[in-house]
Length: 240
Image (tube, rainbow, N blue to C red):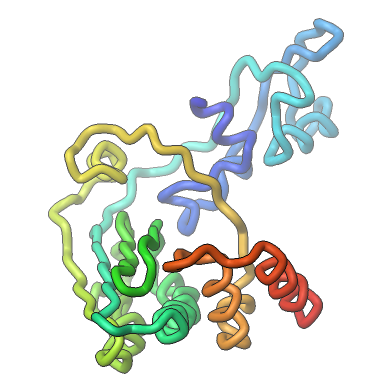
């Protein structure tokens, strides 16, 4: 997809928590319109097209030939890995309740300078949550212990349900991180992911409802009925 497709599609990445979305870093674009005209779009020229290409499917409005982007200093960072594994006998409800509570502290963790990506796989009998590429920026009052304290608080309280480990990886450069993520082999991944922007209140408020939604849409031993998942999501939206 490249930088143009990534940025004009929104541009979520490792540094979004620190520097914002990629679309917000676009200063100017040269575009070939459907009529064949080559135009420059920025805050002053063709501002309507400039607005449209930043996160709304840039290629819909023309062919973006090049972009002028904001540049930022390479950050100093610490990379952490978090693995959470369901213990034998853990029920679906118990597993998703823990995961819901974990989501509830993610905004608190982010305020300490941590961001990252995670995956969840397997039914509860073999469920794992792996949060990799967590970036801890060295800010004046940010430390690894302070940033991970909310996570440890939630997972320690669930010691009858899950086991977990937090590891600190020997990576100090954002470029080294990009090379290894999400494959530990060091080879670039061809995986395609999608991102959603979710308000903090969704994960902090009404965690019982969040756990129900995660149980319906998450990995299960048996596939859920489509109507049941649809009804639950519809009900959750009507309650917000």
